Image (cartoon, rainbow, N blue to C red; front, side, top):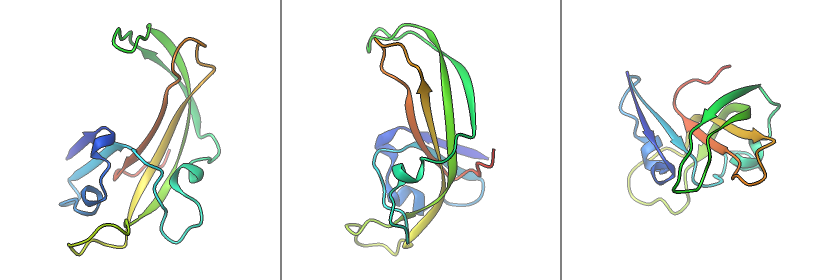
Length: 129
């Protein structure tokens, strides 16, 4: 099994719609608040699910940002979503929607001088817990 991991520039509908087979998966940080198929709410609104759990992770220092090393306390939410095909997508016979799992990770009580962690991830892997 291969999982292709990408940052926000990899959040392209065509990628989601063309997964080759069950042994290839995508895990990509969401770039935009996508429309959900047959829903009145968008992806980011949908992710306001109940908190599924909390975790503590080590955040390494990064002089480019600047960020000092620390422990971050995170809350996690997730759920299954159907992303709507963008209206601007022309050409190929892409499906009207793609089923994915969405995960939101948000830092609880970040240090005031640091940018809080806030990740929104989309994946073809089943996220059940």
